[in-house]
Length: 285
Image 1 (spheres, rainbow, N blue to C red):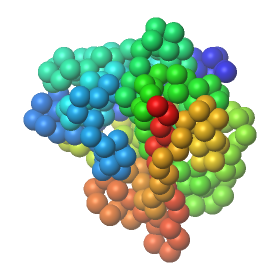
Image 2: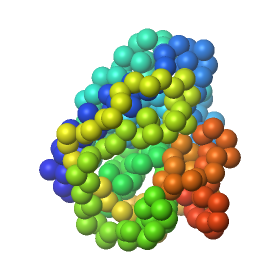
Image 3: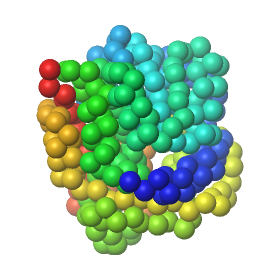
């Protein structure tokens, strides 16, 4: 497990999170009025969350976490970024939506939670989560350790087949890096600003312009088979596996076609690719 890499990424995310939230109009008012930042895919895979104990791993600034609380879940959000967790706590207070947020490296948090006997009916991660995981086996074991018997882990993420290509749809990276880190000197970018409103359902404002992250970031390229096998090896049972030929809120290629304000397909003339995938894994009773 590369805790040095985790610390590098914490600094990069601290810087980027401020830029991201600068583009979003009054999020507390949006959530108070019943707004949600969730997409249909994760809502479908999660199912009825009302009354469920739900932990949102790598929750970022808490918008999805609080949207799940709005559906009746008892939520705990966990993220490594100090800035993200501070913002999430403020958003919970301002919106009046109950949610607990804890700042921690996800590995350390899951180990501590398991030792303390904390168990959850649902664990959830989404959209750019797996690429930050440095030790896939330890991650999967940690998830298995915090699920109650019969509990489910739900993942919706961008497909590694899509992240093999650069913005001109030219092959640039391997399907799997085999656990080797991939360094981005420019760090976590301002993808919210670049999304032109697709990631700001509360309303888009210009906010920070020409953002330059002073901290590099380090990611990993994991194949879908590696993610699924890690969960199986940790004792979980794969209940559902989905792939989608579109991306929610993400435009990795130049000229992508918008199906809606928040959903995009490959550019004209480029064959469909799996751009997202979903997994539901269950801890046996």
